[in-house]
Length: 228
Image 1 (cartoon, rainbow, N blue to C red):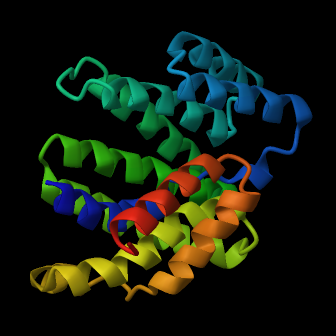
Image 2 (tube, rainbow, N blue to C red):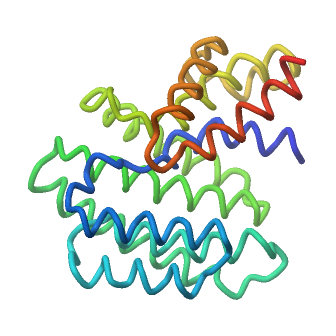
């Protein structure tokens, strides 16, 4: 099961990072930070209030809707046997995707919309994985990855996105080497580069606005479990 997780994470992790540069308003940014802190502390009701205010203030900004959805993701994650929040979580991600599609119809180069649409599809894939819908999870990942790649091309200095690209680059090289039987499953994905992955995770750990903690965690896991 752990191996399956890493294989599917290669597909969907690039979509999970947020675009911090889009949150230019000081109050919007401050509320986002407070909300994220509440999530890490498992203070879900407080996080709901912060992100609901973001949605109220900017209903057509996908960021507020996306962060609000992630509150339910953590409710699901801490008790995977409880499916109470599944439908609400998926519905809220569909709202993010619809908003992003509307923005992309107006401007196909809207990097903000690319990130949050990719992130939403990626999270849908992660839930499908946890519900043993492996083909659905892989399909979601394959759909999300090009969106993130396009966004990176437009905004290569977004350090938060290095969480996803760093994890991808590292495990896309390491997993096939350690588990040769997985190679046919990864033929449709770009090849990895573990040294580049470590560099990207280190950069995000040091400079990321919102993903630095996650990057630090994955670096610790990589150095301990794989780099010895």
